[in-house]
Structure formats: structure tokens, C-alpha cells
Amino acid sequence: MTTVNDRSTVPGSHEADSGESNPQDPSVPLTDEEVFGAHEGGKLSIAPTAPLTSPRDLSIAYTPGVAEVSRAISGDETLAARYTWTQQLVAVVSDGTAVLGLGDIGPRASLPVMEGKSALFKTFAGLDSIPLVFDTTDVDEIVESLVRMRPSFGAVNLEDVAAPRCFELERRLIEALDCPVMHDDQHGTAVVTLAALRNACRVVGRELSSLRVVISGAGAAGVACAEILEAAGVGEVIVADSRGIIHSGRENLTPIKFELAERTNPRAITGGLTEALRGADALIGVSAGQIPENLIESMADDAIVFALSNPDPEIHPNVAAKHASVVATGRSDFPNQINNVLAFPGIFKGALQVGSRMISDRMKVAAAEAIAEVATDELAADRIVPSPLDPRVAPEVTAAVAKAAREDGVATA
Image: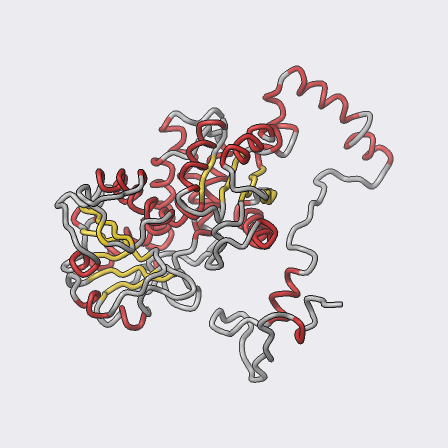
């Protein structure tokens, strides 16, 4: 019988390095014992918040006392937010079609990732969450299921749903549900990218409004990055996919890319990354493609390069640093990690705290500004965002998002 601790039977098993090393150093290779051992039995459990150590405790938490609470909620459904966990419960929803860099591996294989997401919600924002993986890719079925389950949760975090279906699914759920919905692969990435870009501008002495930014990749993260950069007032945004620069004269654009063409690339530049990056101030890489060094060299002085693809950045950060003043990646073993955990716990906490019906653009920009501000006390070219473990981040994001929700008129509490 195979067990997760039997290294001889685990795919990709290897002997651990026998040399002395610091296990807390993110650059030290992970061992199978660490990884599979931590996942054995799952990474989540449910614990009661009310004492259950006496007969009286049982009478309060369950019958007969619980009947009084149920009767009260039956008379006023809004009381469920106070007397159940729904107002602090996020449903982490996936169909397993775009999991990390693994692709379409299915709902069961995606579950460890969703459990990890729930663990992050609890650790960084004190929010309970429950993974829900769907054995279907039918948008109608997923929407209908979540609409019928709406009394059980307070918000929906979409995760690892492939583009372009993720755009329709998020839009449909926002329309159908009266609670916050966010696809984190889109908007979490975009929020932290904007935060990093704000601080990178401070390092090189530029303004967002003067930047010419090229986004390599027009999938979920690329589209969301373009949207939030425009909302934040970036001067010019150009998006390129595997076929080249997206512009209004290009044929066979998908509806999403047609909308991008209408909003971006105001000078109607055509061609590929060679043309797009020539003289550009910033590159945001959110694709699986590789970008040659000479294209980075062709960018403007004091260029900013965010090579965010994992595990292999579009260009190695050490190579990019030869030509750019600020370099960031999505990896933990290089400076300036663009990590979604800086954003999503506080965004959902702030939205739920004020009973927001949605997560608006203003709330996302406010989250980015809060993340950027936390890093300003030690701002440097190799520290444009705070550490994901910085305890100040989630509270600051929570407060900023709650304030923005009230200003947008989407808060109910």
C-alpha cells in the first residue's frame, strides 16, 4: 500500500540534501517529507467557538437553546449574519481547470490548493472559508449551484478557473449573488501588481500617469492588470498575447480582447513585443512565454520589469536587472515577490466587515494603495512590496477596502 510518507513510491521522490541548511530559507529545496507530510489528512479542520464541556454547554450550543436562535432567524433572516458564521465565511470555488502551473488537472487534484487558500484566509485575516470544487465546467451549473447555496456563505473567491470561461463565470456570479465575488487569479494579481508598480515609480522617480506599460499575456491576470492600471491612471497600457500586440484593427479577437483593444494601446501600435517594448517604461509579464534580453535592453532608462510567471519567469531576474532599475517576480526566492496573499485576505475581510454587496474597482485600487504604503518605510529597489508575512498588511488592506466600500455606496453595515 502506497503512503505519502513512502518516498520510494512518491512520484518525483528524491533524497534530501544532507548538508547543513536553514529549513526556513525559501531558497532551500523542499523535501517530499515536508510537503507530503504537511498535506496528509488535509490542511483544514473545523473547531467549535462555543464551549462544549458540560450538559449546560450542550443545551446552549445545541438543543434546546439553538431552537431559539433558529426561530429568531426565521422571523428576521438578517440575523443570520450575527448568529451564524456566514458573515465571516468565504467559499473558495474552483473547477480545477487552471491550477497553478499545472493546468487542467481536475477538481480533486485542485483540492490541496483550495485548502491552502482557506488556510491563508484564516491565518492572515481570521476568516473562515470552505473549499468547494465542482466536477463540471458548465458555467450555468456552477452559477445555479452557488445561487442555491448562497445562505451558507458570505462571499465567493473564485480560484484556478481557466480563461476565457473565468470571465463569464465571475460576471454571472456578480450578477446573480448579493455578496462579494472575486476571481483572485485576476484581481489579486492585479492589486499587488499595482501596489508594486506604485512603489517602483517612487524608487525611479516617476509618476503612474507618465508610464508606458506593456503587459505580456492576455489571460485572466493580464486582462485584470490592464483594467486596474487604467483605473489607477497609468498613462498608456499596451497588451500583447501570443499573436502580438492587441489593437482594434486585428482580426479574430475574442470579445474580451476586443474590449481590451477598445480601451488600451491609444497610439494603435502594431507588431509584437519587439515593437511594444521599444522605449517602454515598464513590463508586466503574466504569460508562459520567454522574453529575450535584447528586448529588455530596448526599454527606456530606469525600466521596471515584473516577470511574474511561475515557476519560470519570462526572463531571469538577474538578467533583467542588468538593464532594469527595478525587477520583481512571482517567486519567493528572489526580491520583490508579487504574491496574492498580500491582497485577498484583507480585501475579503474589508468587504465582509461592512456587508458589501460587491468588490468594486475603487476597493481594489484602495487595497493596492494600502499594500504600497506598508512598504514605504523601508522602500528600496529590492523592496517595493512588503513581505507576505508582514502582520500589518491585512489590517491595513481591510481598513482601506471597508472605507472604499462605504465611499462607493456598496456597504450595507
